[in-house]
Image 1 (cartoon, helix red, strand yellow):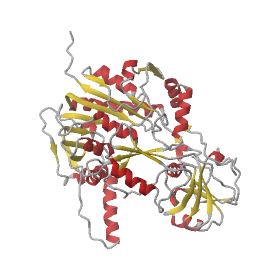
Image 2 (cartoon, rainbow, N blue to C red):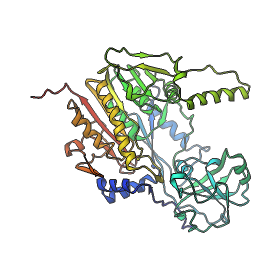
Image 3 (cartoon, rainbow, N blue to C red):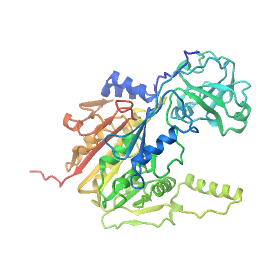
Image 4 (cartoon, rainbow, N blue to C red):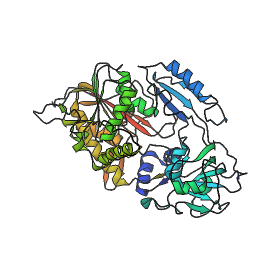
Length: 511
């Protein structure tokens, strides 16, 4: 059945969004972006913690790990492992695919997984029971099966063409209307880790261990060189390098979770100075603290704070709690997590764990008090890959861009004159990218675009874009050349991303 393979068509859930992107990018460029979004990046970026180890040592250990006998790897070709030519903290690993997988000897045995499980498996994960939608009848542990992925038929309700745990007849027709475009949605071949009955009854644990994938990507255990390396998207590393905070400086990461860019900045600063890392979630702040601890980044101070309210009012003095009062500031969901973990320890006969709380920002930071500010705020995330369905609406695009402008106002207030601001997103949406850069330049004449010494992305978009009855200005050509736009795929094979760097000058007086 060599006609089965991986050639999906990305579904844009909103025609208006697709039309907006055609208007800005052109039909051919959007088609290339859409195709790339449905595929995993073949190039993996490894950021080396140069404060604790060297790139040469990591290169040596990576080579041993990737080609050790115990490492699960398809032998289509060897991985290409090499130091990034411009980023001294980065190592690149080039995978391979798509490959032709042989499905001919499976006698109709198949497992169909949901979209989100399929997206994870494209990046190297195995198949776990919660992601299984349907299987052929009578599957036993050790059986070899084809694995395909289904996309929701009714995305608004998360409904698929079958009821979860359905039984499929052998050799389900590839044109079965329950699974649109199914012949192009096969992920590879795997071996059942348990029987079909166990998948249905337990609903958890490993279901299928993949043995032949369409894409061959490096698989590194979560504990491999923990604290010495981090698997991180290349544009995220570039964003931190673009800010380039100096050792001994005072830095603010306004929306810091999960902490990758924060620890990258601590590395650039040689662990000298101070980085305040903010997030609204107690759980995420504790996660930032854990990442900082693993990386030996003692200059990071993670704080629970709403970045839309992080500027001190006139006369206020900076106040950060020691964390003991944070319990009352937790959301109900965060409190339930803490309580559930406590009950689990009790059920397993473990002693109570000493409860720790995130520090809380009780009053904001003084204006013009930071040498550098990174604003990588919430965005529509339309650059993440792989993705098989995008349901964002035009209203989502506009509301997110408006929310980001609240954060922008605070970022500009907090950076010192002579200091730097980096604004970044992981979306291809021009309303959040070029339009917000235009807004910064028009609203704050003291903010000047500057070019990063690590300028690897392409230029921004120029001209204007019309959305409904509104027309939004993009960038002038010379401004577009100062920012970095990363198309999904592209020459660097990255996620979609956008980076702009500003220097805050003395306020310009009108003549």
